[in-house]
Length: 260
Image (cartoon, rainbow, N blue to C red; front, side, top):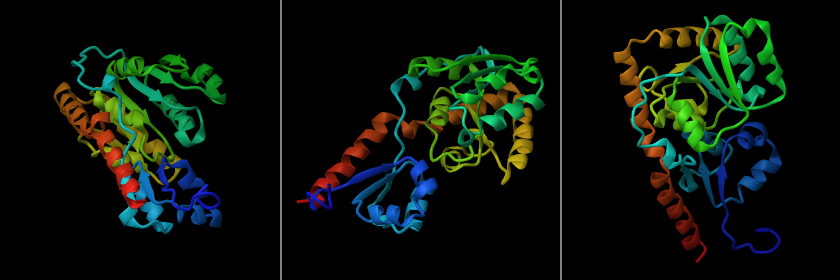
């Protein structure tokens, strides 16, 4: 549209991650990137990747999508129905296969899994039968908030995650996150404070680290868990919609003024 019809139109593009990770080394991608007036990256490290591909820092903003109000201002929930919760598509990039391998190593736990994909039948394997596993294909934001609040920890085993809004949503209701050290996790998690990072370069290293992290997290006494829980709630505050929306409006207003 900009090239063929209206060269003065201003383009504001929000980058959520997958295109940058998978396609940004192509010449076509770099050509199109140069035509963007303002870029919004959902995490600082994703923004750095855009700058590595030639996008100017002065026109780059870092801003997450923001979390709904149903995840904030909730009263503490002392009763934890689940030890661990996993939310995401059953695909390799989300690390669902790693999560299943982790479950095989862990002692019997109460687990909630929300998502869908071709590997769901794996959950029926006898080697996972000693866990008490509940599954859901999907959940409304309000239902998700309830489930997070009823879970001791959210586990995120993603191989790539530009931000990971489910981590923010979980922390907002006081559920600490145990996550692989992706761009999104590094943006949100202060290791051992509001959650724990799972560090490893290969799948086997991540799996070994995840076993240690989850095992230690489940042994936390109530005082240390409450400290981590409070830090999680506090760290999610800046990602509320009422904080994000005014910043988005400012970016678009700047784009309008640029075109005048």
